[in-house]
Image (cartoon, rainbow, N blue to C red; front, side, top):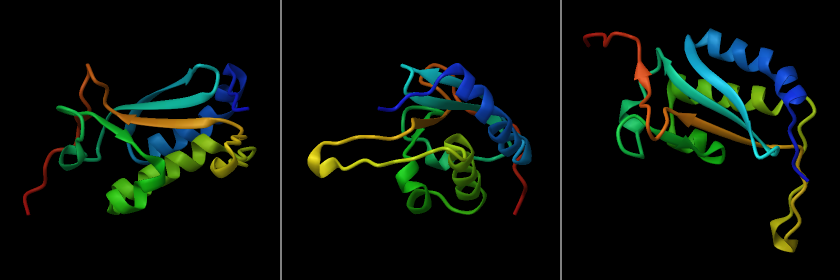
Length: 127
């Protein structure tokens, strides 16, 4: 059964913050329903404006489709963030065919929120 505690969040936070710092991004880390580690990216130097899927300035990132939906620095950032969120003790023994779900915890990444859009802090460079 998926479970993530505040202590586990505290253990994973330094690696998550290192990825955020590397890409100059601002985000919050939280736990949802004791099963999901959430990162809500609020602002940063990466321009996600072409990828907004929910209204203005909001994306719910599907971690299984990062490589297919993002490219370049966006893809690198999101893949590194997912790896940091999973951490060294992550396991996933899910078997959806037999309706058996066993993993250490779930991960959730949002770029912006439904009520607070993501803010790109980098100036657009003329091509």
